[in-house]
Amino acid sequence: FDSLADEIPLARFLNLVETVVRADFGIMLIFSRDRRKPSLILSEGKPLEGSEDYITKYYEQELLDDIPEGRVTTISDLLTRDELHQTELYREYLAHYGVGYILGIDIGTVRGIAGKFRLARLEKGVDFSQRDRAICQGLVPYLRSALNLFVQRIDMEAEREALSMTVSGMSIGSIMVDPDGQILEANAPAETVLKQRDGVFATAGKIALHAPSQTRELQDHVMAVRAQPVK
Image (cartoon, rainbow, N blue to C red; front, side, top):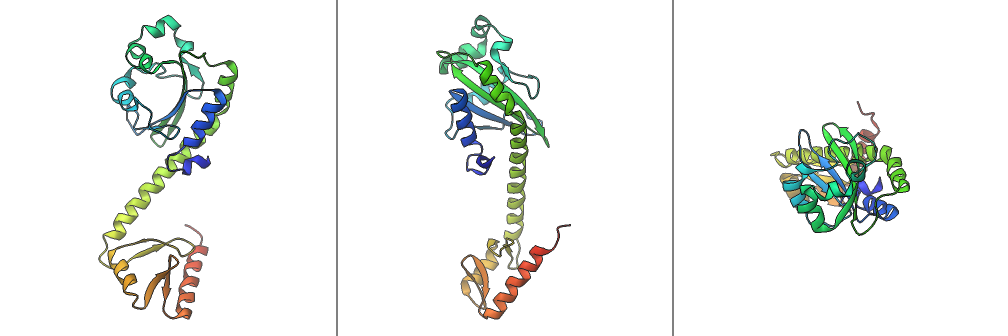
């Protein structure tokens, strides 16, 4: 769950799962509301070669499409090796990257955003074992929670961006602080006032007034607002 807060969400998690089950590739496909194709592919930290082609040209040929939600499914559950090699997806895409084995879990949907977890191995390797499948099946509750937290992160970032745009568009000075009094956002008029240091300024990332007693009073006010219950 900690990796959800990383610059590239879930990168460390995907890298660890790849290591544990000896997969060559691991991705999380994110689908926004009413989208048939993935809106985002999360990988172990570096852009995967072929991702753009996969989304734009080959996802509609996905071999693990509409698998049972929350249940580990592999290509070998659905197709023999010969049947796989005859598919257009294999001939035009998978074979190009040497991929021969894929394991998938469809996680579900949170407020219109869906997630799909996929692991792949090169064809020169071996198929996923019962142990590998059991490990991945045990991850299902955590994957669902991770999707929920990821959606919350998206909501928070969207809310903050909207608030930032609102604050920036005000004609009067406006400063947004966190519960500890640290400045989070200041629009252009407020930035001008702070730079002029005419009675009010910023120090150590917090608002301060030239009179220390007034600064303490301001800080006490922020703390009092923090202590109020959220309605």
